[in-house]
Length: 130
Image 1 (cartoon, rainbow, N blue to C red):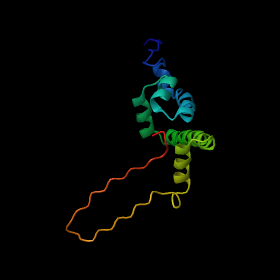
Image 2: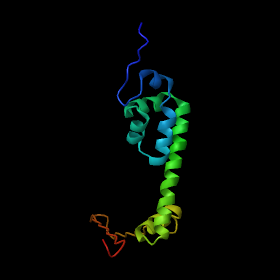
Image 3: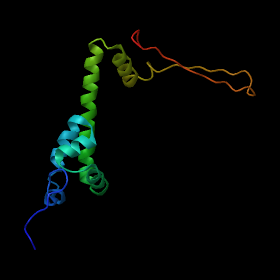
Image 4: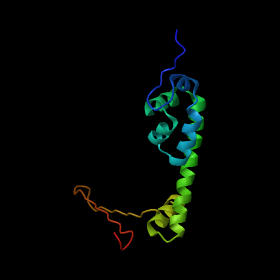
C-alpha cells in the first residue's frame, strides 16, 4: 500500500476528513456566518459531508447546535444595533420577536353568515420608503 494521501475536493485529505480535523474550523466559521455551505468550504469539506456527519455524530450535532445559537446571537446583536440606530423596520421586528404578546399583528374577522366565504388581504406599511 502507498502512504500517499489523496486530496479531496476542498483541499482536505481523506485522512483529515475521517479524523474529523475539519470540524473545529467548520464550527468556528459556522458560528460567525450561520451558513453551512460557506463554512464547509472554509473547512475544506463539502456540504454533504457536513450533513452526513450531523446525522451520524451526536457530539458533533451538539457542537453544531451551540455554534448555531452563537450565530443567532450575533444576528440579534446586529439587529439590535440597527434598531437603536433608527432603522424602524429592525425596531418593529425586534419588538415583535422579543414581546409577541404586546407587539403582534392584530387581525379580527367577523362573519355574519357562514354561507358566504370571505376573502381577506392584508397590507402593512413599515416606513415611508416602501
